[in-house]
Length: 173
Image (cartoon, rainbow, N blue to C red; front, side):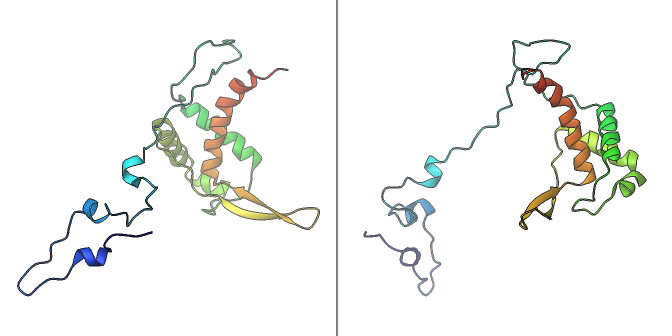
């Protein structure tokens, strides 16, 4: 496969008393330096994916079957955060990657729960990384287990409590 001028050749060198002029990037790579002859230009073909909301028929036991699709965001209330926190506290559990135990979380409980509610209700909550722990199996091998932070466990419980009754209504008894 024959290629055109290399980048170094195109760039050239400054002559005495002259300033080197750099060519347009598109001109530099028209000869195929950045791709094979059968590939299309990356920037010319690439399309960015659009974010679409989940469109599922979400029903509740009290409303029965819903013919439409619900695409609104989940209405996160402070009550939902509090109830989820109580479930997480009852389950106890190990500290996550931030090494914060439930007891440490409770020292600033109001602030932590308010901050979680604020981020979840505004849609700006992103879960932190989880702590990876290896658990021994019966056959001597090990399996990996991810331990989320206390804050993330509360957030997961909020979503679980909201979605579980809606999805369970879709399954047959």
